[in-house]
Length: 456
Image (tube, rainbow, N blue to C red):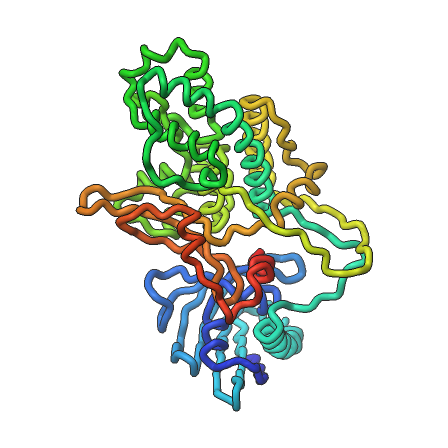
């Protein structure tokens, strides 16, 4: 048995420290070599909850299954993990100390195999160092907000899956707004006029509230989308109708699934997941189902690309598809070295991203950059510093109750500066503009810009 213990004082209330340590999503920020810790059992976290721990050491990935063995809020948190070689018992004790908290952390490792026992001397030395280092990182993150790292000679801007998708969303929306306000609005006016329609009086969702022309286009399209296929003979001869039909049936918006509509909507992977999982809509289930569907159907729509990475924040943001605006701020009076842009986007996501870009460029005669290492700087600039807090998207509704209830996802920033998704039902439709308006300042957070930067 290999046992190590260390203690440290953190200048934060005991409740805040316990909550941070208890939050599995924060673990990679302060646990050395940790890639992910997630709860695999349902219900609130507590005694007996099942956990899964992923770590990388020396370039090798390891995974352990575990469970919570002690859960005394603001006092003690303990877990037990196991794989083929080791049993690992983790214990944290929290004691108020003046205006701060004394945290005592112990780690007990029990070798199980012959190979593990031979490695015990090396494991014992590393364990003691890691326990102390973890507490030091915990203190630094809670008191200073991030881990201080030595600056490399050449600054690297890494375009990973999340940055790429946020960048693609930004580039797409900038191009799309021009197409909608410039080319497609006259088409919608013409088709709606021939059919004797008026723009629909409905809540204006997404980025369409940003300009009167976009708002008008949104209302015309909502009116047209409510019509059945029987109206087709009156407008099918119009070039304007054919253009609208080509756009709405493009695979960049998903798969066409409703031939009974004049302008049939696309069904992307998240829409299909909502359909399949009804009426039990739960955020984790929908994210996983959407990913599975995207993989099976080779969905390269904007939402399909987001679904592939199983990131609920990216999925909610791209489904809402609002343009991101953020101020670029230089933090130094000295000229920084020219950064190196590193492309670390998954091969499959890159392949489907190219299909999306090729299809979009063909559809609108645009020039979105082809996803590749050569375009890393473009996607970094477009997607690495954009604010998505407050995006709210309505995904579905339940008309079997009165009044009708609408199902939403909204992006917020938690008390630790990390993006999270809130799911909720409401009698009214919540748009991004309305949801952002109700957000209040969070005085216990860093400035929102800093919080959102850390959330990446």
